[in-house]
Amino acid sequence: MRHSVLIIEDEPRIARWLKVRFEQVGYRAEVAHDGRTGLTLARAGRPDLIVLDLMLPGLDGMQVCRILRRESAVPIIMLTARGTHADRIAGLDCGADDYVVKPFDADEVVARAKAVLRRVGDTVQRVLTLGGITIDETTRRVTVEGRTIELSSAQFALLAAFMRHPHQVLSRERLIGLAFGEDFDAYERAVDNHILRLRKQLGVAGRQPIQTVYGAGYRFVPEQA
Image (cartoon, rainbow, N blue to C red; front, side, top):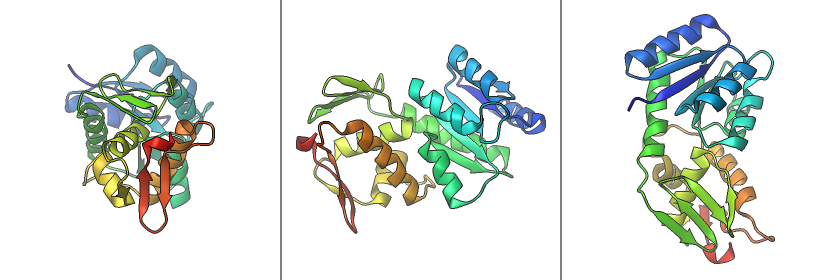
């Protein structure tokens, strides 16, 4: 079964270029040129991956990303002409799983898409339960004290890594390797932002299972969940 990708990009040349390249390597590709149309197509077509431009007419990429993230865990790669560290972190913090800075090579976007989909698809098919938190790696469903929560694919990968290594102090570098693979190019600050959002979802009645170990990284203590 071929993967499907939705490209939401307002520059026709770039959108067409990406669509052709994705189709050349076997994807089914669809294009939207504004945020509202992209949101409609994402809801109707349920693509396996979304490539989302930051600067869009109508709803911008940040708004589209936040809306999609409330509704699904579809992997999102953000395209941005803004290359500053703060802008990249903002894109990841709104729920994107990866980003590519313009100008870029289409093959780079395809390679990152393959990496994101591999991380989503290669999880071991099992259910893990610790401290009131349950994750189903087949359905990608997460519950906390019986309450279903929605996570991005990056946040899901981090939580799965924590739950497979409870009570261990994990450095940011180690977390990146466990959750995304050793070859994943990510800022450590981006991991911090994903964990911040994950903590907000996991915290119950003031109890927080993800502890910061200053100078060393993070530790998952399920008894506190």
